[in-house]
Image 1: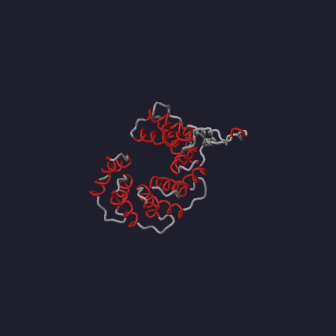
Image 2: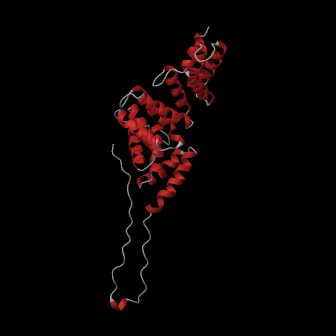
Length: 266
C-alpha cells in the first residue's frame, strides 16, 4: 500500500584542486545536469496532452516516466488508466490505489479524493470508511471545483454515520458546499435533509427549491424527487401532469427509479 514518489537530487562537485603549476590551465567544463531533471516537466506536459485527447496508449509511457521521478499529476493520471482499463492495461484497482496514494502524498488533491472513493468502495483492498472520510475532507477542503463531488460523498458518510458518528449538521454543511460549488447531486441531498427534517425542521418548500436547482442543473435524481413532491402534493399543489413530466425527464436521463414511478402514476 505504501508508494512514495522518487526523489531526484543532482550533486555537482567542484573539481579537485589543481597542482600549483597548472593554476593557469583552462578550467574543465562542468558536467551537464542529469537528464531526469528535465524529463519530468516535459513528459508530464506531453503525457497529459495525449491523455486529454484520449490517446491513452501513447500517454502511458510518458506518464510513467514523469511519475517515477515525482510528478504527482502524472501518477494520478496513470492511476486513472488502471482504474478504467484504458491504454492497453487491464483494470487493476490495487495498482490504482498505489498510484493515487503516491499522487495524493505528492500533493494532488484530486487523487486524494479518488483514493477516498477506493477506500469507501473497497476497491483494490479492504474497505476503510475512516480513511475515506479523511481523504474526502482533504479533497473537499482543497477548494477546486472538481472536488465538490467529494464534499457530497463526505456528507453522505456523515449522514449515514459511516466511518464515524452520524452528524446531520456536518452532512448539511458539506452538501451545501457541494451544491454551492456546482455539484447538483449535493443540492439534491441537501433538499432531502429539509424534506425529511434531518438536522433541521421539515421544510418542503426549501426541499422543492433545491430539487428544482438540481433538476435545472441536469441532475436527474433531483428531477425525480421533485416529481415525487408534485405527485403527493408536498410543498407544491398536487399535480400529476407535472409529476409525469419530471419523472419522464429523469427516466429518459437514465435514472431508473423514475421510470418505475412514472409507471405507477394514475
